[in-house]
Length: 325
Ligand SMILES: C[S@@+](CC[C@H](N)C(=O)[O-])C[C@H]1O[C@@H](n2cnc3c(N)ncnc32)[C@H](O)[C@@H]1O
Image 1 (cartoon, protein in one colour):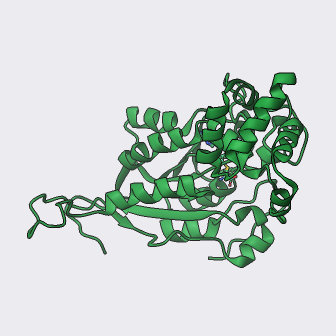
Image 2: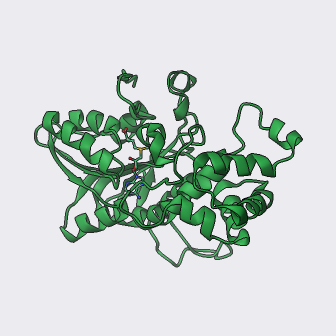
């Protein structure tokens, strides 16, 4: 389905038509948007839920809550906002015995956050080293970059940034901060560039040598993978029979988790492969709506380059006893 995007808004929702085509939000349903952001997806979903439907929106960023207030005034369905980590929000909804027809997550950060220079998410602007989605949280990027030891930093850059230069960069950060703390994104970029020999710097071509380290620090500041690991089972539990779970990821660490989680739910027999007959009786709980992850079309990437690494996966919760279609 082609979705006409409103380019005047600061965040353009990624894979929006595909999300709707796959999960078919319908009149009167209850949906949970775990990552409201600027409400791009929420607007499209709310239109489909209509006046009898309900959309619960979650985001830990107060800037998203401001956007929500604007959205709620015009929304065609019932709405509610929870400003908290989405895993906590899903847990709260479960305590309230809410049953949802659709739960979706659009992971990572919004363009609003990247473009708010003073929040320190971007290596393109010089700003205080912050990177907190929730500005009330104590841990920020400055604490990690100046407080973690060399081994911890190298491990972080390798694990969450998949950066092949992790050790060199960690060593250079520690060397520089002995003279003075690294307080700004500009100083962190300088340390990363200073760690890399000219030939390595040139090998990045159009990419930025600080990209992976910034991703790693941001993931650690916001405990992004812990939230995702906690949220997926909670989201699944919240779904009614035939409910849909969908997630849009932006890097392999997220996508791998979503893929594994959905594949486990879709698995039938769990007997060891050398058993001649099934003795476990395990039934699949999920019908995968995406075999492979769905990527944005070249047209979407041309219109919105930030969509490039987006990957969508979704599954439907099978009613007990139903087998896959
Ligand atoms: C990619 S943006 C979502 C954009 C949104 N779908 C739209 O179309 O405008 C991700 C949002 O999720 C929020 N977020 C990320 N991790 C979160 C978490 N663990 N709990 C709550 N909100 C989170 C961020 O603050 C950000 O606003």
